[in-house]
Length: 308
View 1 (cartoon, one colour):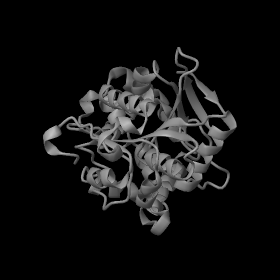
View 2 (spheres, rainbow, N blue to C red; view 1 turned 90 degrees about the vertical axis):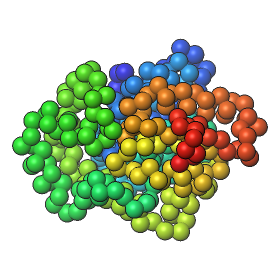
View 3 (tube, rainbow, N blue to C red; view 1 turned 45 degrees about the horizontal axis):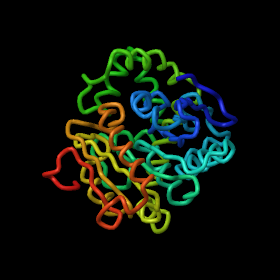
């Protein structure tokens, strides 16, 4: 995938062989970048044009001038990018923080979203210990301390710590993926990188504290697009118990749960996620009547356990 630079956002555009097919847009999580989606895109590119986006302040996208990267502002940036490019009714896919941004677009810009796929979305719940550690990056001065700590570590050690946080089984990381991410670790040395990491953590905390109509749970109830939820049962950042509440919050929803998977199912089990994504697209093509139980369906790797 070759990066192309848009007026405000850097993206990687992978075109399907069919010029008339739909477009899927992929939004990464906190500190992520477009390459997080490479494995999944390789499996779905035959069905959709793929646009993986570097959110403002991450990857190859410069931060906004005022440094404001709240979920609301990130959603506006993505919406403006889609509007400028003329994209409508895209299949929107988000992971973690990117899932919150995708959710907001599904709630407030339904004209942009044909289907919604949320992989370990950072919905507001009492977070586990490791997620609280990430939230601490939002405290004043902590990102700089974290940066100095990283500088004292080898690139190998930095990646090992990252993989232990987001993967249930870091041994699943392929040599090619690791080599790419080792080359790209220089992104962490950009002058704004640590500030953006701190701002991103603060954006998550603010989203968790929203109440009333601004709450992500209220936004979930506004979504009318067919929605796929994907949860890893061994996620150290988003507790698996969230899946039950999320399944109940959306109107037209199906759920994929994956044992032995952590926070980035699209990297850990791309084939399973791709199969569920293709099923979602097929249902969207056939219309609401294709889904039983009043628009609610369940896709799970472990049917005996129920939705969550």
